[in-house]
Image 1 (spheres, rainbow, N blue to C red):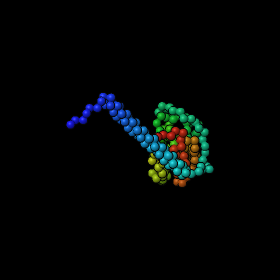
Image 2: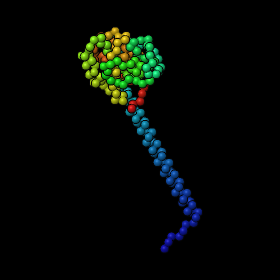
Image 3: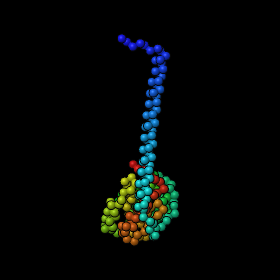
Image 4: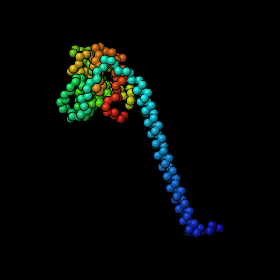
Amino acid sequence: MSEPTKPKSVQAREFLLAQEQRRTLMRNASIAIVSVFVVGAIIWYVADQTAQGEQDKLRPPANPAEQTIPNEGEGHEADGTPLTFNHYPPSSGTHYGAPAAYGYYEQPVSEGYFVHSLEHGAVLVLYNCPTACPDLQAKLNALYDGAPKRRCDDVRMIVAPYSQGMTTPIALIAWGKQLDLAAYDEKAILNFYKRYEDRGPELIPCA
């Protein structure tokens, strides 16, 4: 025996109630999804800041022999444009639109590119060899390969030959900072790197 048909008014109320329940479920589901994203973002931010704080504890104090070089600006010029700096080796100033890649080089790197890398927080290890210096090059190459990776799992270091303004065989350069070394000193180089890497005026996101 079939069930009696419900009055249309009852059917309408049940239909409206079902719609309201569906809307409530969808609204609650949306709130839950947004909450998960918000909580996840908060957890990521706290973890990132904690990691950054722990990393900063590893930054050694400044070397007393370091120089602070006056800031020459952060302007940009087209690649290949002749550039002039007040201080050599330059540690700031107008530069090209692309940075030099981190790494060990046996050929000079254009100032326009490595100054952009400094702006991104790279540290330069410049070596001046008027004659061949394979022993020093081998040490610097090994130092780069073994340097600690920091934020973004990068070694933010460029090792390259350079001569203009060099008064010592090795000059360490960060944005606005310089430390001259009369001889290879692994500890001094790594301490300078750990202190100043990723501290340029322009912080770039990880790839």
